[in-house]
Length: 195
Image (cartoon, rainbow, N blue to C red; front, top):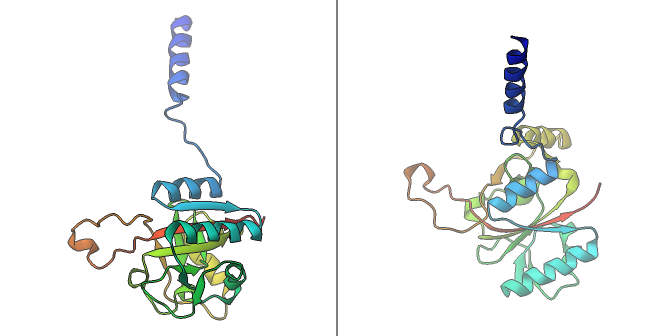
């Protein structure tokens, strides 16, 4: 009787540990990149400012962009060495070069606030985004992202917190639930290693 007991208990152990059932635990950056790319985002990993400038130059050239919108003074250091013209105000016809608040690992979303968007809704802005972020901006989920914003801006919490959730410009589904809420963007992410 104990032989049969051992035989059946071993089968149960083998079934419990089958590879199909095991979850893969990815790091925050790996999970984000996987989710971001699966949604159609274009990801460029950089380890230096020179690589950021080189990648920006390639993006501008690939898309034939000669002018972009950028309201962040700190980002202009990257564009000075390119041939692109910088426009200060928002222009729906020009690509938008910006930073973000956080990179949400569990779903590949990019979180923005009024610090980047002012009072504009994401859906009302250009279809072409270039986002500069650092590896220190990864968070597990939206809750951690919101907590991070609250922690970073204790005295002056930004408004207009929203996220880009799709990175392809496929025609949206004709559904009354998403009418007017399409915030899909052709989005390039320049990620700088800072950890």
